[in-house]
Image 1 (cartoon, rainbow, N blue to C red):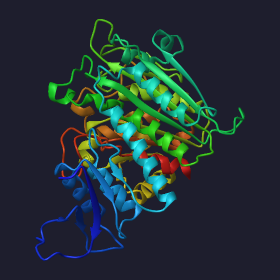
Image 2 (image 1 turned 180 degrees about the vertical axis):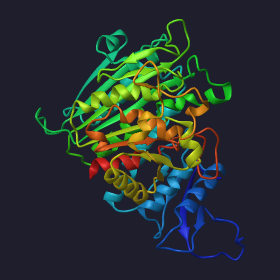
Image 3 (image 1 turned 120 degrees about the vertical axis):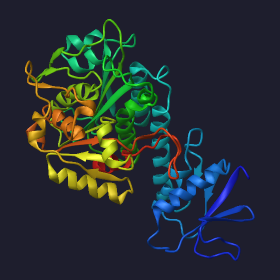
Image 4 (image 1 turned 90 degrees about the horizontal axis):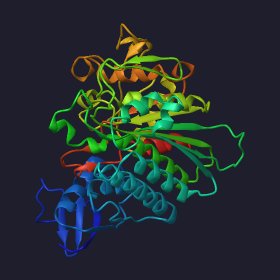
Length: 429
């Protein structure tokens, strides 16, 4: 197979084509067969991209009249893998090429970061990588602060500090302010909050080996919101955006936090630790409290938060939670428009009471496996305790489609970038 293959969409049926095959070969070209030029089957095109990559094609050049922006992106999603994250050459006019190339680059940054080994990507490295990436895009419009180690405890960020204090690698909170107006009084359009657990052992509620194997991806929320911010900046975003990354390693040691500990958050909420493996919501609580200070129109948090969401969605969709149905509707609409599958799961005010404690305002989970029935909704309910205005303008994305431990007919093994397009579109509205 050649290093670079020309890929075309074709409605013609070659004489020797098997009806069960989605691709055929013509000299140096590979044709993907479609039946409808207008309403293309994007899932089938992504599957064809995955199949073509497995044939040993190093680079793909998309050519021909039938390609559109959405079909090209579907192919790229299937074709991309570790070591081939930017190996698709797109076609189209100048504006379309820019959008696709910017998207491919932003996704590649996030996917590469999520795929890093946990010994190389520790909390400090994650904070610095995200800061450098955003700063390079808009050096004159970005300011930032990193709070790390014992300074987190001194400043009252008890969630990030306690989850990370058992590791030799200090936890940290990164706060980025993108303000293209350079006016300090400019209102904040949106605040993004990302879970950045660079490795999750489960703590004293230790995960089994198989469940721990892919936990390098537990910082997927941080990578996703950073890449979304970057793509929005590349797309010409002129609104003020804040980014908060809540970064820690959840490890076991004599310094690690313990079951039965009670954390006292800056908003007055006390939380009993019922499960040290329900750590993501503890660090996000700090991020949401910080986000509340900025009084932004939207608060969007993203996290690889619960196995329960993955069980509900099959890992094909990200789970959407909101107390504000208006933002939920907007999210589902833009997710569908950008072929970035999302599905709304239940969240009501009563979910805040699903993790009761006899010793604190709430526990962080229950002692049942997976947090018990409705675990993803209960986790979202816990987060709802830390957002302003009864949740108006707040969106929680449980990124159940962020990472695949094994390759499938649609995806290579590893990070997918799912969720980036949805958050970017919300920022651009």
